[in-house]
Image (tube, rainbow, N blue to C red):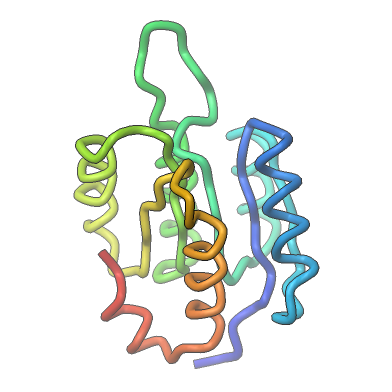
Length: 147
């Protein structure tokens, strides 16, 4: 296996989350390069043009009034189409039922994909641990850790 790119794509329509995650990972000891996208369209374009070692995406990127938005799963689909097996973290503020549905959806891919609840008190520690794990473990360890 070739060395994994230490480039992370953070996709979130909310600038506060996007910039916070960029700051957290860009300033960490891991030497990560962090790029951001503020929309589904921008993320799709970036996935077409760049290779990423990890993608962190919000589940809801295009809020639709009166409807549950899962557009972040299109980021997962595109990532796995272009670079099968690339790790991904899906952030959500929805309840356990929705998280389980997202995990079941993502299980179709032979890739390490995690669903992380966005509002938990340990969200930053959980994310840092997962990012460190992605870039420090072997591909076999990553696959065994997927959902």
